[in-house]
Image 1 (cartoon, helix red, strand yellow):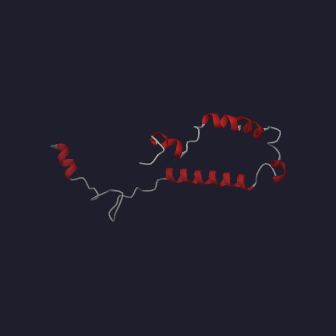
Image 2 (image 1 turned 90 degrees about the vertical axis):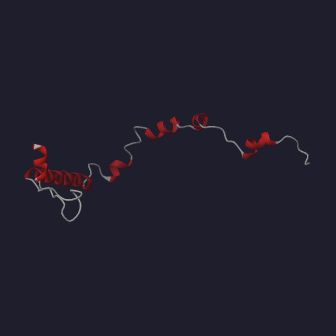
Image 3 (image 1 turned 45 degrees about the vertical axis):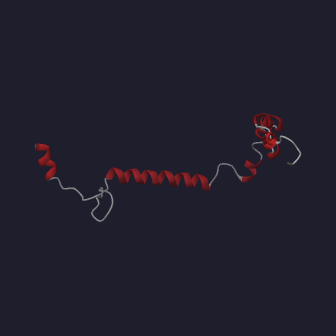
Amino acid sequence: MHLTIVNFFKKTVPGHIFRGKRRLVKPVSKRAMETLTREYERQEQIMFLLRHPYLTQEQSAGHAKELQKHEKLVTKWTEAQTLSKMKPHVTIEERLNQLKVKEAWD
């Protein structure tokens, strides 16, 4: 009985509470504003680092040659190794070969 009375006098929004003309709008708190400003400052610092890279274009041009990453990748994916993992090619003629009983037409 007590819960029914509490719920009966409770002021709520008709319909969906976060949509529509009479929606429930959460007030902006100081903590939310601080979080948002920290996020914006972090994004601005990331954008600054992206605008001013650590290496120049000339310095970053050949830095991966000494690591030989490309050669390792090529040896990893040789054609023989790739073909061994793939299924063999099947033609339509091979699929329909069991339908051939005799060559002569009736």
